[in-house]
Length: 149
Image (cartoon, rainbow, N blue to C red):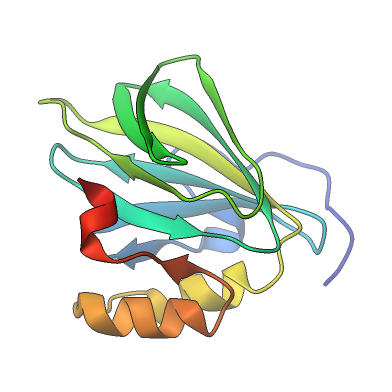
């Protein structure tokens, strides 16, 4: 991977023109290097990413619009626009848009590891079981469904 390039990734666009659709949620990559991976998510009401673990990466979420409910290490918390969520590696976490309005957030993960390759493989998949299987091959481990309760 090349060094970080200077410049701007415009609002509503992905780095290099790339966009991912992962189980109906739109993701825009914003910056991609070995040391960090930043992407924007757009979550409609009812959309979520189930509780999972990144064993080799720290992750952050900066909520830009709306509200996200998060299950963070077994505890429900809520993040609003302007809030920063910190998720150290190995801590189970998932995020859920339980509101009646869209939510937008900037995520970044450090180091990148296999996340870009994972998102490339998950693009346009519709089978959640296949998403879980492929994710495990890329160091993202989903917990059983009861972890989301």
